[in-house]
Image (cartoon, rainbow, N blue to C red; front, side, top):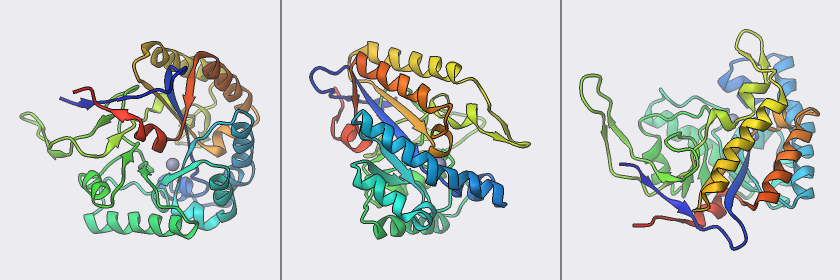
Length: 284
Ligand SMILES: [Zn+2]
C-alpha cells in the first residue's frame, strides 16, 4: 500500500498550491529532444531572456512564491537570471545537468550528473532541498541516490495526483508474477502529471510534438483539477508545472493570470515545495 500524506494548510486557506517553473532553457532541446541547431537554442534563449522575467513579474504582482527546477546547464549559461529568481524569494531545486534522461544510465553515470547539477547550483549559493527528474523518469537507482544525497523531497513520479506520498523503491519488475517493492522512502513525493504541464499542449516540435492547443482548453482542465483538490478541504495539493519558454508567451500569460486569480479567490495557499514539505504529515 502507498503511504499517503496530507498537508497542514494555514488557517483561512483551503489547499496547497505550488507553481513549479522548470527552467530548462536550451538544455531540454540539447538533452531530451536532441536538437541543438540555432533555432532550437533560440527557443531556450526566449525562455531565459523573455519568458522568465515575465513570469517573475507576474508572481511579484500576486506575491506568490514558486519553485524553480533548474538544470546546471541553465545555471552556467544564464547565471544572472537564476540569481534573480533566487533574489526574488523563489525556491530553486535540482533538475539534472543538461536535461538528461537518466532511465538507462549506470549508477556511476547518474551520480556524476547529480553532482554536476549540485556543483552548478552551489556556484549561485544553492543547496537544493528537492529534485525533479528532467525527463520525468527514474532509473532503478534514482530513489536511493536521492536519499544518499539528503534530498527532502522529489517531484517526478505519478503515483497520486492531489496528495503527497512516500515512494517505494522498485526491487523487481516481473512479467509473470507480482512486482516487488521495498519499504516507503524517507523522501516525500509531490507527484507531477502531464495533465498539469504546459509543454505537451502548447509546444510544436516538427515531427515530435504537435501542441498548439487552445489556452481555454488548458484553463478548463487546470481549473477542474484545482477545484477538485480545493473541495477536499483535507490537506490536498495542486502541483502545476510551467516552463518559462512555454508559459512566458504572450498568449499564455493572461490565462495563467486568470487561473491565479481564480485560485486566490477560492483559498489557495501559494507556497514553495520546501514549505509544503515542512507542512507534510501522515495521519497514522
Ligand atoms: Zn525540464
